[in-house]
Length: 163
Image 1 (tube, helix red, strand yellow):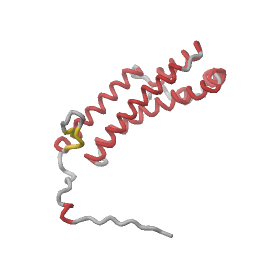
Image 2: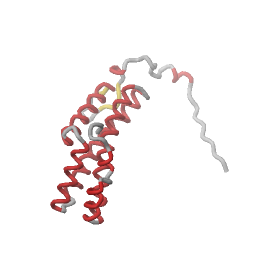
Image 3: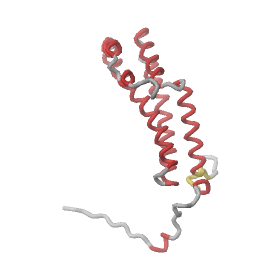
Image 4: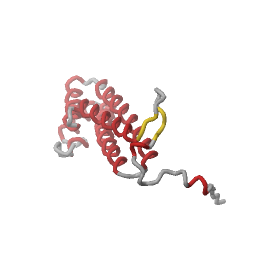
């Protein structure tokens, strides 16, 4: 049985929608916990702060950051630093997802959303690299060593100037 869903829209409501040419700085979004209304510009600023925090954590080089984590794991066989790194980066990812959703809601698809998506991609890439090493570390440290020496981890196949 095929079910169809229909959405009925009252024409009088359409006139109240934001026009595509309206400035993003005046577009109110969801109130924050302090009770103030955040605009799309505020969400973009928050996204930039998240990016700055991410770059602070990885010292502006995701490849070198994951390389250091991997080498440190191979020296001490302690998975905790890999796990902690994954958790801290995942917290940034969660926050950037919120920014993404709010920018999408306020502005739709456009330059603002593209900026946030670029930050999102940087964070997600670093997380996937850390999690790859962590997954192998959980199973067997010798597999981490083998992949590291063979340069078969994802982060090792990327030109460090691009990360």
